[in-house]
Image (tube, rainbow, N blue to C red; front, side, top):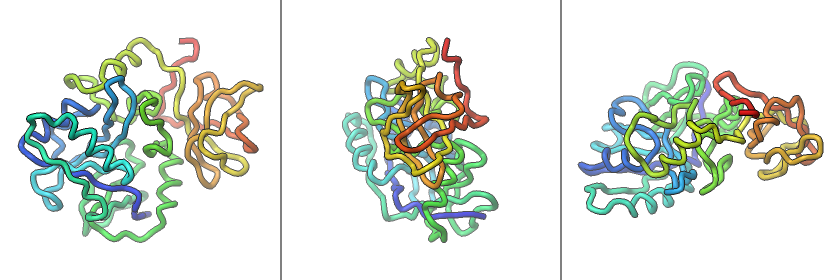
Length: 272
């Protein structure tokens, strides 16, 4: 088994009798029936652009009668602030619990027994999220693991108030409940899907040379076709135009990027 603490992740606690219905009307995934599972979801702007995303779960042994949201620790105050704006008469309470409960990850084997464990819902290979346990390992090991799988990590890879969910794999990775009722930003998300409006995708890349800084332009035959996002140790993610996702090599700063489309990713035809 491989494992690592994730000190850059935090937890937001949502309690109160209206917590499920409150979240259900605001976020992209289904918050009913979490049970012993977990759901990846996002909060969008009213215009349908990404603000933050999180892994939602229930764990009575950690916090009774609550939904916990696992997200980048830096985004926790933002999420609480945004959700409080929509509380109105809903009987819910929100609290940033970051730092009070340890957050970690485990993969490539059986997870530790003495902890609260939830299977990462995005991909079986992603492994487990682990809460309330002091894990050994280096957070950089998990970063390499998620880059290899092509999993985005918050603002490292997405642009607040700009990114459309389908650009970042939320459809294939189960971050959108298409059959649920309305939620904030649903109209643009649905229109992007059903009208085939997608022009760019966040794609895993192999990096030959030093990993370029975020936002470094990606070039193909002298034209800008995307931007670098996060990366380390020869692995990265880049936001690419569809016609560039199948290119054998792309230039980015002083590095060469080689797109590596994973088996889970469904890319529409650029002509479409």
